[in-house]
Image 1: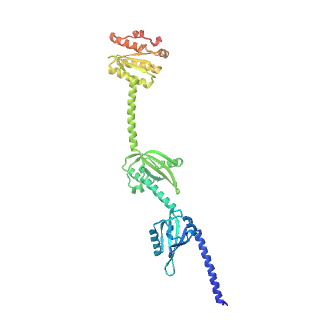
Image 2 (image 1 turned 30 degrees about the vertical axis):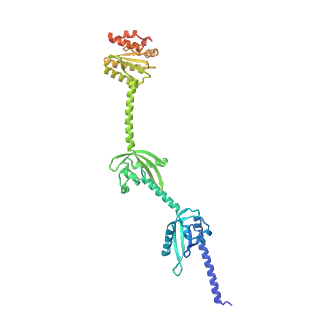
Length: 418
């Protein structure tokens, strides 16, 4: 028969066992529901003895597949590295660091592992417990950030950003090289050091514009550290990050482009001038037919510019050849208006000032009617109906004396006879 003391001891032991099991179950529930991967390995065998669902999901195994698996099999690291890490954990009681795990499908991922050793009362190692967090996404982001920073630093164009107070916060290597500043000067640099004409008032309005347009490309003249001017093309973009506002800018040195543009512009102007001169000569050619007679055949429409060219060519030719008579043949001119008629009269007046005369040939009937309708007075200008007749009169008159207006009128139609 059980005495009272024995009964009380048995009852106390049973209550303690129930309490222990309840506490154990509670901790197991906590471990099973934590998002951190947790695993336990027996150090005497090196086999996994516990693994929570979170780590099962990360590794792609079921719990049944992992329990009893050799610890090195879940790692994607060199076995020697795993053995050294486990040795440190046993000797020092803890190991922590980045380590690669291998999933069931063979793929690998990075995790941060904190491993602790649990010892027997006699001090011998019992189990190693690991707490693992998947950091593969963080590693990828860090690598991308590093790649982006490397790309920006190695960019050929100058890149920087500044705040809305005009303080320069970042320059890449190309920017420091472009403006001639050392990296340690960044702390003191402002936008006005780079662009003296860009005031803080302009910066505020510019930022507001960027907020609506997103980005804007402008050409500016920046200043080198030595004071020299640098023409640039700057693409500015508005950025808002962590409740702070910035303007990012990509700056392209366009000195070579400007130099090339200036050279092309100069060459283009030379070509235009040469073409203008060639057109002038083609549109208003001056042909000597004797020592004292020149012919200028005109073809096509005559506008104010061409009339001016005709006048210049005519006067230069008369002076150069010391001509006594210039024949303006307008057979190929379809339309004559008041402006053209006045140009002929002014040409005749200018030529007379040089001691020569003007003859107009090739006056078509419709043009003769136009002269009459416009009331143009051509009495001071010799006229002939055709170029052939005009040449004959000119050569004859040069041999036989001055041609008078009445003689010329009998050799061809005049505006009054049209």
